[in-house]
Length: 127
Image: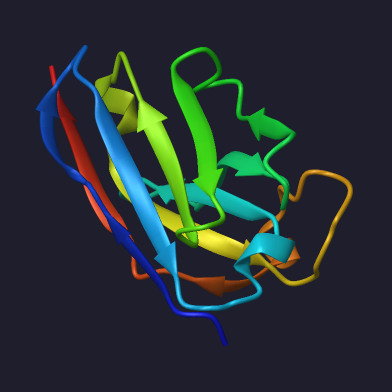
């Protein structure tokens, strides 16, 4: 089991930016894809963004495309989510997750693809 710890959430105004970080405990981090999901009150958890194990490919939900950027630093076992031009509808608890398998060639986007999850960090965007 991989321990994931998110940080960087907070309360901001619409149009502001935040950068979320997710630190992983496993030495296998560099071999596994990572993902960010979010869950708004009363809604199901949804995929936000994913990045392959080598950082070469990334994928975004349509709702965040062009505003959010995912990246990773394998030397630090950390994945990031830069969120710009935040909107009130981005308000949610954000979770990072690590892929169940190593060296996946495609982007993992389904919750079932991920084996370990962080505790979540709250992002609140006021209008």
